[in-house]
Amino acid sequence: MTWSGFLARLKDPRTIAILIVVGIVVPFALIHRPEVPVSRSTENLFTDSYPAYSGFVDELKGLRRDKKLTSQNEFTIAESVKTVTASMGMPPAILWCLMFQESRLDNLLGIEGERPIYGLGQFSHFSFFEINHQLTRYTDSNLETMKSFLGRDVRPIGPIARPLTNPSSYYYIPTAVVSTGSFLQNRFLQLKHALRWQGIDPDPQLLWLYAAMAYNKGTRTVLSLWNEIQRTEGIDGVRASVVNPDTFNRVASDSALADASLRRIWPKDRAHWYSKELVLHIRQIRQCATTSPFLPDQSREVTSEE
Image 1 (cartoon, rainbow, N blue to C red):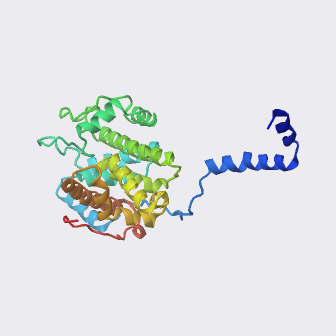
Image 2 (cartoon, rainbow, N blue to C red):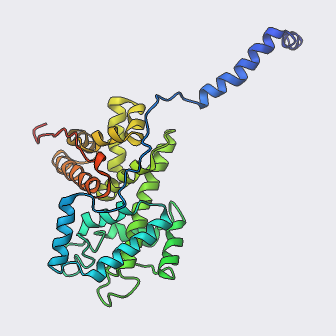
């Protein structure tokens, strides 16, 4: 067709109509991928009074009774959690319960031991490296919170035994809380970016629970879990797992699913052990931090022979 013929065609109303449809509908189809509707929770999943589980309440009373948790330390932890989480937009229960799960609120845990894991959030050298060198990798708010809360940038932070009031010591409770909150928030933002890359807008409440999983076993563990869900259920299965509380409940309780996903990044025996640890960890976080209607498990265990 000649150029003049093409221009003549453009004057045809039918051609104009076709071009309009192609110009509007096709680009929209390429950008907008239809989603399967997934019900979202409108309720607050996190409790305002923690720990929620009666067994943990009794354990907390025992720590007080045995003087393993002083009233001053308990108060400092509670007030630090309130301030830090308010600044970070984080549910207070998730940070408090994470530290309770990791250390039973013993800020000096590991100070005299040989195991290189320390304090309230059981920080390792990997955790310290991120806080000291990659604190603002995902958001500047971590540093802003630290400066506001502690008065200045106290990095480098480490397991400094003396004096315990040194703001650069992870054994100093306010520093431990803001550092643990920052590390947890980085896991949240890492996972959020990964989901947004797939066009998924997660429920922030559920994403905080996934962030707690990533805190325990690494971000790639959660990403591997989502990859396994996508392999078996498609991208809509992943979307449901980060939007619908019932679906999350099923996923987080499924040792077989965790085992299958972790075998892609760990040797078989280690994956089996880690999968059980991960399911137990998030179960206890949920029992501590979330409201009672969210507690029942739908577990599917896996045997070592599988």
